[in-house]
Structure formats: C-alpha cells, structure tokens
Amino acid sequence: MCIICDRISMIKEGKNKYFVKELETGYVVIGDNQFFKGYSW
Image 1 (cartoon, one colour):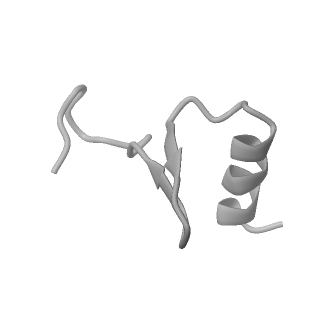
Image 2 (cartoon, one colour; image 1 turned 120 degrees about the vertical axis):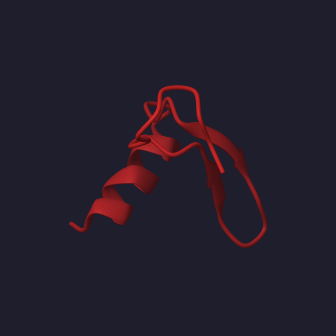
C-alpha cells in the first residue's frame, strides 16, 4: 500500500491521531511531520 492509503486506513480504523474531520471530497488532518512542535501554516 502507499503511505496515503495507510493513513486513510488508519482514519477508518480510528487509529490516526492527526485526523480532524471527513469532508465530502477528502479528509482534514494535522501535519504529523512539523519542524516546530505546535506550529502550523
């Protein structure tokens, strides 16, 4: 599987701690690989 497919599977299993919300066209997630802790764009 690809990385994105793995992440979507984790969301569906309730195991992705970065998942925010499912939209009609995709998923909202918080970046899990940020340079500065707590910082986002």
